[in-house]
Length: 169
Image (spheres, rainbow, N blue to C red):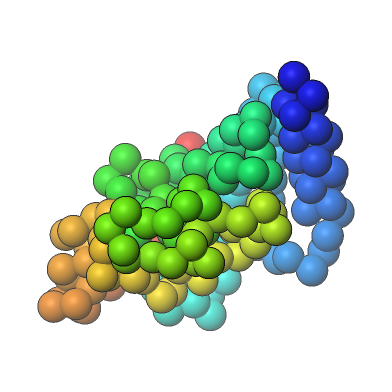
């Protein structure tokens, strides 16, 4: 149980730091039901990003009790059309994959989760991923296909997500 309480203390400190840090614009975090292992996140994407600018996207970070040895899971609650986001909202990004060799040989261990990652580095990586999708191993095949083969249609679908995010509750 000591590891669970150590993880809880670390997460509480990381949350407080993020809430007090004015250098990370566009990211807001809070606890779900006062549970330090479950965070509600709001990403307010600035208008300078290529596709998702102006959007307000709500997500959840769910941390394991073995954190920081194992990565959290991230799921968007706001519907988001993106090659690296499964249709159910789960985020597929290398740094959220467990710290082991990829059995498919796609990612090196260095690209995967490491205990030096923090909720802040995760969220900044996800924001970066929004403007630079990895379409080589897509979580959403339709989005990856449009990204590669029909960029105007991809942009149209993304603009709808942005508009819908402003009304999503």
